[in-house]
Image (tube, rainbow, N blue to C red; front, side, top):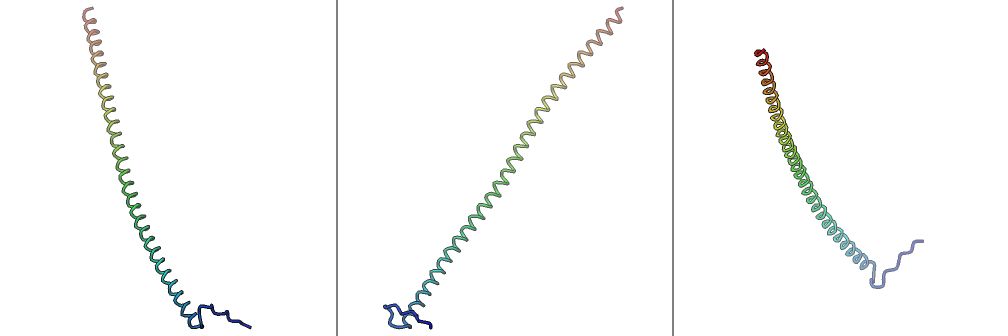
Amino acid sequence: MYMRPPFPPEFSNRRETEAYLLKMLQGSLQTCDFLRSVVDEQDSRHVAVTRSLEDEVRLLTLENRELKQGVTAKCLEQKICLLEVENDKLRGSLAHRELEDGRLRGRGVRENHSI
């Protein structure tokens, strides 16, 4: 046999108890709605911050890529300059050898004519 729980002493009848419980339930629902709105607001802020950070990471990645390209270009320019200097040295050395060879040939021709 089912026995109904007794009413709390502060309530005189079932109707007062139900009204009180209904008010409590409505208050709980309002609290839940408020907390849900706070969580949603926090989520939207989190999403906004995350998107902002993602944008910043993208910009920094592009900037880093440009800097790397700039460094690579400067390194290539330096290598080109070094190669040009080396090329000039080799040309100078070759011209010096050609002069020496010409002098040696000139001496050989003069010596052959004097005999």
